[in-house]
Length: 236
Image (tube, rainbow, N blue to C red; front, side, top):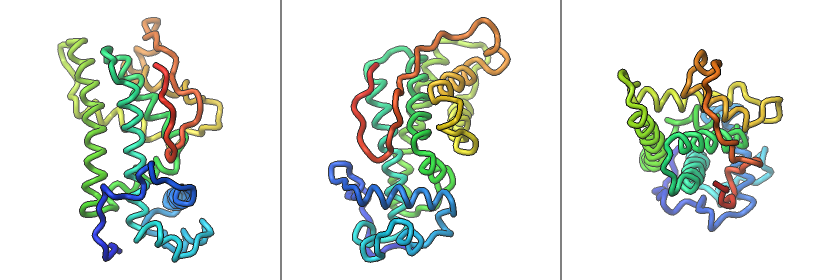
């Protein structure tokens, strides 16, 4: 149910400058439960039991279950977009920007798999201003991916270019599907995953097995990235 208080997304408690550990604990736990049970099958009592925070305590931090979902989604898209814009600032090579885009997305969500599943499954569970606020960030992120792909396409000047909408959402489809199969603690390291997805997206499976492969720079992510806490600037 919606809170009786009109939510103002711009005043969200998810502002990192006002962060505290209890709110982080609530949101991380909520993301895990939403991922396991689905948003609609989860109650605030479920979250209270899992977090060890009383219902009164939960309502101190957020006015409704919907606001919890909003805070998770809003912060995820805000953090991944912020990191990406910082990492590609000043770069001209669209191929390098694409590799950083893929690295940024996969390394971020490989460290936050529950949040990734929630973003994928509960994209339309928000309504009104909350939905609009998150959708604006998602659109900004998708437009940035499309811009990078357009730059690559203009440089390559192929006779039959791939539709940019198809290419953009195919890229997101490849990356967002990893929550179904990827194990961050398994034998495939995130750096290897990034390089393979980038190679597969640009060269295709058949061409990617030939001798003419792209000599990618090594992936820039060196340690797990938390969705909840700001990270130091990444080296370029």
